[in-house]
Length: 307
Ligand SMILES: Cc1ncc(COP(=O)(O)O)c(C=O)c1O
Figure 1 (cartoon, helix red, strand yellow):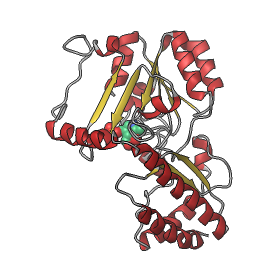
Figure 2: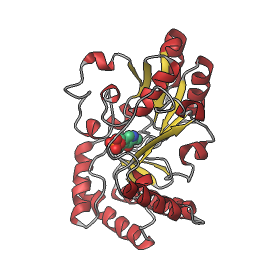
Figure 3: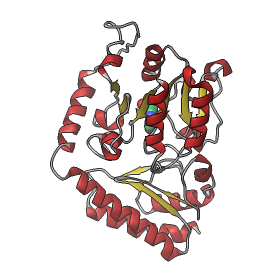
Figure 4: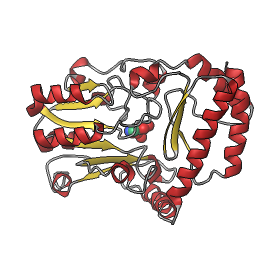
C-alpha cells in the first residue's frame, strides 16, 4: 500500500498494473482479481471496495508480455508502476517465463514507470537477495514481509534512494503506523537474517526443496494421479491438473476437490500442508531430511486417497 502510494507520488501518475492471481495485501486498490484467500474463496474482488477505488488498477495475465506492451503503448504516460510477485506464490507457485520479468523491466524503464517487485514471499527465500538476485533483475521498489520478521509481524519496503527520499519527513509522501519499526519484530527479523546469511543455507534449502518436489511428483505418478509440481528453491505447489500451470487461468483448472481429499489424507497422517490449492508450500531451515521422508511417506498414501 505504501509502496504504491510512493510510486504514484514519484511519477505523478495514477495507474497501477498488476497480474491476475498475484496478491499484494488487502489494501483497496490491490484487491482486484487477487490471489491467496481471495482465490481460495473464489471471490473476484472484495465487498466494500468502491469500483472507483480500483479504476486505476489494470489487471493483466501473468507471464504474458504482449498485453503489457499494449497497455504501455496506449496508456504509458498514465502508468505509475507495474507490481508483480516475481515468482508468484499466491495462486500457488508459478514461475516467470524467461523474458517476462525482463520485459516488465524494459517496458517500465522505457515509459518512465516504476517496477515494483513484491518479494513478501520470495525475499530471503529463493536467495538471500530474493528474486532480484536469482533472476539478475533490479526493481525500483521492493516490498518485503514474512521472513524479515523472523516469525513476528512486520512489513517493509525499500528501493532507489531518490524514491525513498520522498517519504516524509524528507519528502511529501506520508506513511506511519503504531507498530512501524517495532523493536521486538525487528530484533526477531535480524536474528532470522543472521541465520540465513550462514554458509550453504540456500544450497540446503534447494536440496530439500528438490527432494520434496521430485518426491511428490514421483509419488503422484506411482498413484496414477496427474499433477504438475511447480517449484522454485524452497517454495513449491502440487497442482492437481495434467497441464502446465503458468498463470491464474491454468492454476484455476486444478481439481480442488481432489486437492481437498489429498490435503485431508495428509492431515490424518500428521502432515500439515498449506490448506489451499492456491498457496505455496515452503521448506524451512527447521525441516530435516527425516521430515521430508515422513512427508513423502504420507503423500504416497494421500495421493492414493485423493484419486
Ligand atoms: C506476495 C505477498 N504480498 C503481500 C502480502 C500481504 O501481506 P500482509 O497481509 O502482511 O500485508 C502477502 C501475504 O500473504 C503476500 O504473499
